[in-house]
Image 1 (cartoon, rainbow, N blue to C red):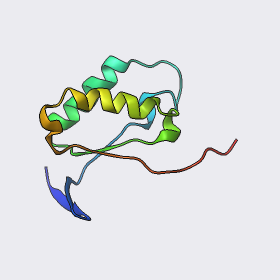
Image 2: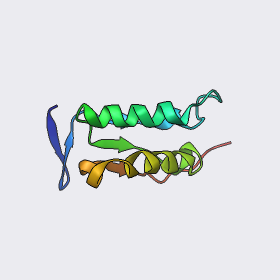
Image 3: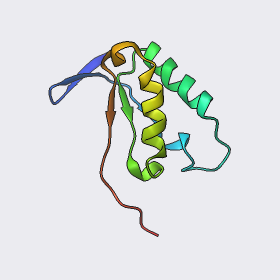
Length: 88
């Protein structure tokens, strides 16, 4: 996996967006499958996991946290949160 500098961080050029893992696109969700997906992405070299409070709220960040908790030393995985607000 090729890497690039993101500020002071060295991250893979390919990241994993987790918006669809906690209900943003529907209700047929499987946390275990989402966690397996995050683990597989890390196994393949992904180091940037994108999440945000607006994706839940908060449930997406909690899911990513549960997935990363099982990664030894979190193997340089970076979880990013971008402040935003939902427009009704």
